[in-house]
Amino acid sequence: MLSVAKIIKSNGTSGDVLIGLLDCELSDLTNEEPVYIEFDGLPVPFFVESISPKGSTRAIVHLTDVDSLQDAEELVGREIYIEGEYEDDGPEDFTGWTLYDGERPVGTVEGLEDIPGNPCLIVGGALIPLHEDLIQSADPSTRTLVMNLPEGLL
Image 1 (cartoon, rainbow, N blue to C red):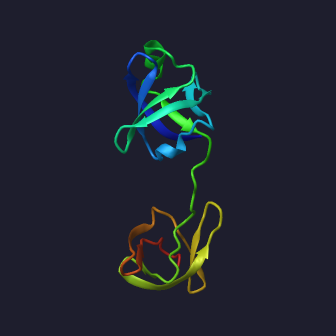
Image 2: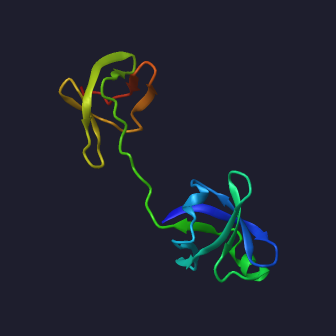
């Protein structure tokens, strides 16, 4: 499930709610697919009956079976989810970049060995673990990657 919005407050007396969009577009909330709101740790489906944009990050929404101010107030503060998963693009490809160990040049990155849970850069035939704790800086304009490599790795 993807968290796409949060219910900010009720709006009016007919069950409408004001939502704040998190990381989605208004078009992601359609009346064809249900949205989900958690109750007691379980996702409960609702259909969007109507939606009116209020700026670029907020909207007034009416959900099925939310027909009163009291119903809307029960939803305030809850997140709205849709079915889906976050896309993981995998590790950055530094092929062609110059790798430094601190100030010492190591070589040019020849490729990436995407070992699950342990991606490695290929530099001069050696595998260098690509872990965020080892990276000191990455500069796309100069295509340089500065790492703090453990002693004895090279």
